[in-house]
Length: 392
Image (cartoon, rainbow, N blue to C red; front, side):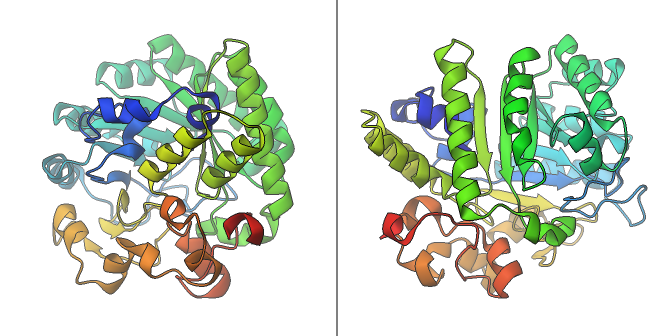
């Protein structure tokens, strides 16, 4: 996760992370990637059921639960273990997490155990009453997925009216006093929508947006040909930086992040060098604190059936199941060769990743993409758009 607003517009300085001690329990959400202890943020896919059918869904969600899911008591046991282990955040996802009847109760319990609880949702099921309930139990954040304005988003989501329903959910969150932001997955079919997403942030006073680079997992595996080429990726990142700066300069600062392509960090730094920005070296310090891709280390995933994955995109590889062993035990067990290597992935990447000058601040980028394209987990990430000159 690369904080464009933090890096490019100076909304976070290196001393901020030091001031907070860099312990995950003490850090505010926007500084979690700088923690020293790196206890994992855990994505729990509480259900595979979803009321939409998004073309890029990593979980290949279905219209109703067809597989055994962790029941309420098993979910409580999972939260107990995560809290005791020191995981700072639990992210309830799906499918569509609001399809699960006990979601509010699970979030309430996580908050009571000292964790920050957030949800990743399509937003269409957030009624006024649901928004108030989520606010009352102490939910920290609601991330609503939008992949463009009405026509494009509804095509992506597989249902006419999805955009309007999501916007209603956003307004309901705002009325309830819940922090709400947008999630946007970039690809050829919607890259032209990015300026309109920035307009939406301004018009509706939405404080945060995360732009996700496409990961080839789940139904997203069918969209490899729809991913941006390297030139388009550079243009998109430049556009995101330009629009973030414009908002910042007009006193409308928003939290803007890019996710799932750690080449963005060096790219921001190199652009700041070209612009002779005095903060460039401070940015390099922040990027070194970030340490790049954190799959299997600073982020983990528990599936609806209890299976533990390196992140939400690694569904083809399971390290164990929380119904058989606690997450904390599974996560700490490096007897699994892949788990061990993911915790020290910089030693194992190959090709241009292995000789890249940015390896310490990128950690080899996304292994799932490399495996999807080449069949080799440790091959270079094909989505890295930095030139040979930029990495040498």
